[in-house]
Length: 259
Image 1 (cartoon, rainbow, N blue to C red):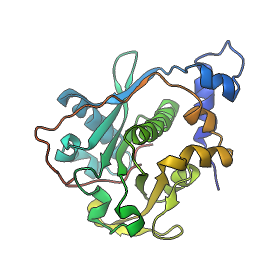
Image 2 (image 1 turned 60 degrees about the horizontal axis):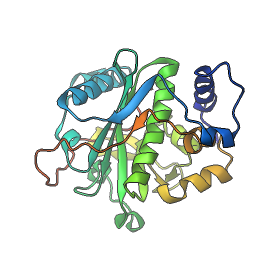
Image 3 (image 1 turned 30 degrees about the vertical axis):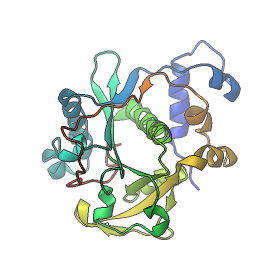
Image 4 (image 1 turned 120 degrees about the vertical axis):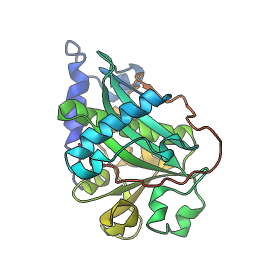
């Protein structure tokens, strides 16, 4: 299985923040926090949501310009059981990345508008990651990795059983490299009605065994994700809904058009 090219970039980027120190072992990384030039938090205001939309438009515009022009804050962004992650520059507060996490606590996932999930997922606590967008360049690639670390931490914190991803080719290989597995068969692409009929793979990662699987696989990002403390990730909950009632996402797009 191909590993993420991002592995070396993430580690190098991390080291550049502390260029004068020697390379840390996994054990030392566990004890010492690692700072980044950006923060990640859960959106807590309308202004935050509009920042997230700004990043989405920019990222999706590189691949789907017509779709990007129509993007706005939608009902799902404010729905109970949904969190919008927002990465911001420490220098000027500019938005650098975003991801929407929707759980099935109050409503079915967006992907369930297109496919019926198998029974072994039907009784679990699920979280689907959508609307991923990041700034261009090497910083954006590291922001993407930090957003996925935040996704895992959020799921662990909220006792989620399975992380759910939909991905088109060739971006599906990134999730294979993060040890996500197919739901419907090996490398099977299925048309998704909620994203214009485009073919996607549906992949899942089991939260409770993720650490063990990454360690056993010798994943190059294991120290970065699981043994390094990143204090710039703040996942304290924020409720943007006006009423606590089920809200179905009108449209949940593929997770990784932004690169």
